[in-house]
Image (cartoon, rainbow, N blue to C red; front, side, top):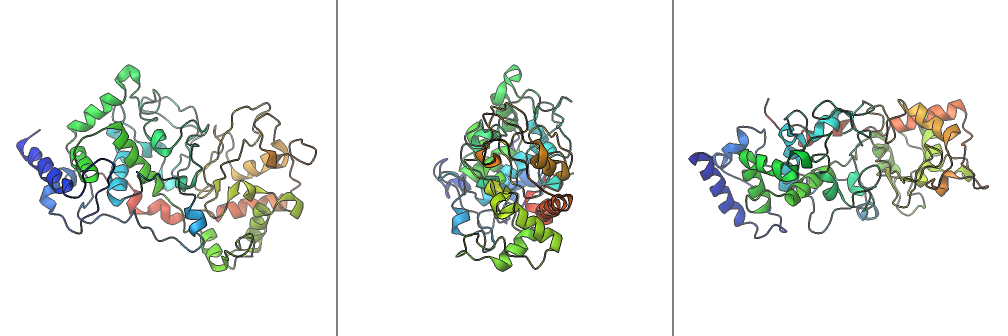
Length: 391
């Protein structure tokens, strides 16, 4: 490391240490910061550490009230902060976190495609294909704890965050290539990471736990609140109603979209499809007690679903990307649900057999039309979440 870079890091450590005393304490964002302290960052990244974007205190509409905020899976020792989410954004978009420097987290979770991949399976660092479809990330902060990954094997977003990096196909730092320690050694040689870790945590120590915490903060900041669905719901929201107003017709919807919304949120005994029993408003994230949706007969794995926000932004659906269109997804619930030990009880009829929804072609089209109103175009272009690296 050059003398100039050593000075940059040392100056920042002194500055950050005045704000925080331990890894468990998050520093607060300064109102101003001399740009010359951060040359190692600004030469590579389009980030002003003296004036960070707001991640910590987002403005959410009324229907994201205390009840919804209570579903936040952020832990007490890792709340979303401006500094932590900024570091997470850099980590998320950095191709140097893959073995050969060719892919990043964002390569499979593309902002413009709803933080997923339109391909059925994604391409890893050396050209191999991933075992599962890339999961949408919006509203991941509202997943029930203990349910990260399609098969829910990770207990938290923190635990999940570095697993793709250590995967032999995805980013390549598996045990055969030195594991996470090899990556951390690389990160210590990149001049911007000691600066950013000191800025976030109070000293320049780069560890897997800190990397996980920063990535989790960034992912939790990806909250979708500006779809047409949100605009319509905000206008009729009433916390005193049993359904909080979600089945009230939305003025900004067409008749077809309102019909699709009614089908989505009403249970089958009331003439609906019952989708909202698992995919709850307004986050459209899956409730924690949901089981699988009967893709294959005899299924024993309990798969989860990502939030349905931005579900129309890119094709390929389910954990294996087997469905190319939303129409095919709807048709699965009309005639394709298979029996098995993991099938959710809400997908069984009164006789205990897999339920087949009695939906006309028009109603199937209405459901698809409703799902298309869940697209949050702003999330796809918000610079707070985009690639910060200079081209």
